[in-house]
Length: 207
Image (tube, rainbow, N blue to C red):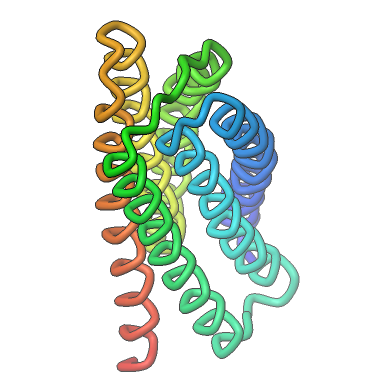
């Protein structure tokens, strides 16, 4: 491997590792805060952090394989992409079912200062990660794997913004229906990510 390519590949691998570490912490905090306050959108955001970690692990494994011998197991990768797609669909189903239940029974969630903090932190960290991944992807001749991971990180930024907006609006107005609606927005993004992951798996098969 050319030294310059190896250097950028290692940088991409390190970014994937940072993504995994950050999303694990973010997910644990978000889910804990969401369960404590009864906020379905915050729990859904935490689950999405776990899914983002899975995606970053896949990227890290592929980049590690490139550094090791330049090849990877495409069969295992296709299976992993299928698993990621199904996990996105499961997340969307969970958020929709719980959100509809809360609307029907009129559940009264609480505000979550900790949830606001973790969402605010995500709006700082995730845009930087997305930018850094795009920089690496461009340096590696528009590497589709890394640029796709960057796009997924940008979607996480949108999820953070939509969830934060829902929580802030709920804390301000006290309207309980706002949280399930924010959860439905997460479900839309989750389905979109799942379809993209599944489409990527199908494209691999076509090739």
